[in-house]
Length: 117
Image (cartoon, rainbow, N blue to C red; front, side):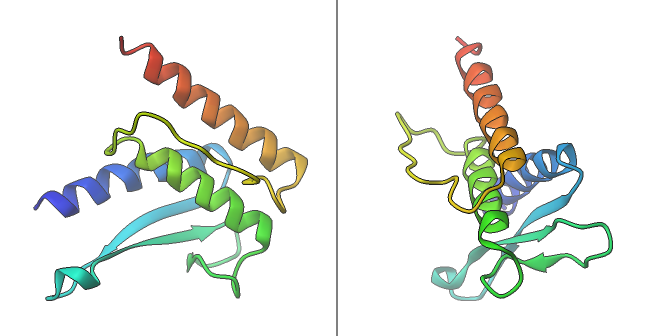
């Protein structure tokens, strides 16, 4: 179905971003009989010996949640077209390495978007 296909596309891009960081991340579609209860879940692992966990304040640091959220927003651009995006203070809690990596992903996606025309 359409929702599963879109979730798979977002998850594929999300996983690619995480692999480039040496980590693992995926997006899972949680379906329910009631469509209003459908949700996209963000699952991440930042260290080799960790198990994959759903993104939460209890399992990841603030910086890890910021990285995960920003990369989700970038991956979402594969299936959603919007005229502009405004993001403020997304780097809160990120260390310099992750901030630089997320910025590079953002610019890579931006250049790839403009090269389509």
